[in-house]
Image 1 (cartoon, rainbow, N blue to C red):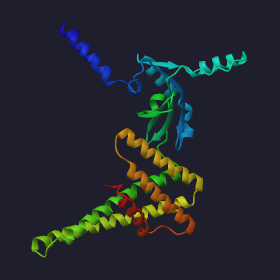
Image 2 (image 1 turned 180 degrees about the vertical axis):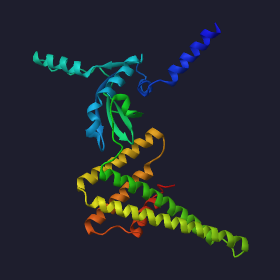
Image 3 (image 1 turned 120 degrees about the horizontal axis):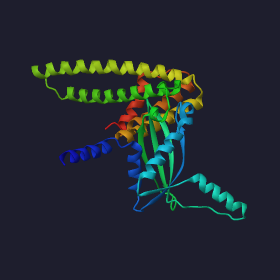
Length: 297
């Protein structure tokens, strides 16, 4: 008897641990409404962001796996949209204008590459009043037969580097400000003077880091200036979307980094209009706007 009990516990543990992300999503969708069973219609899936044209053709398996998970959930009922279209077309041939709404919610899926992962945003819209809720999950692209490249297109790669470096510059500027305030509060006592020297040494390191990161940002912006304006504008928005999705998946606040994209956009536009590379002072100025807004608190 004990062996049977242990086997059952092991089986239940195995099922729980190895539940697919699609099963987890189906559970969240079922819990989003008190309606039981909740009638769902899958509208479709779209690849978004840089490089999506290369792998979006293989996204059909995502829809299939999600539909399979939804079908398994006893609290959900999945409507086949294609069958609905056929029925509506047949009714139209008979002179009837029929629009079938045998679903409570629609699901529209957007897929986006995050490094080597595939991030899915599933937008659930209520047919009755248009209210919506978005769920996110990450899947291994190889699990659905997709091989995505880690290398980003030039504009997206440059923007990612700038965004990361500007975030580090802003963080260092904040640290520098706090250390300078600490220096002002010190007295001319031996112990304080010794501490002041260590603080000044640290400020020197911070200054050097800011200088190096600023040079990197300036270099990348100069490369962006040479690229097509529409491509850069699209890549800037793509980066904001990536940060937004990453925030949801990792349950962290990325709004501050998203705001820094706007600062980067201003530097890029100014460089394009004037033909001058942004210097450290102008880069720090945009990062200071970011700090003053309270985004980095």
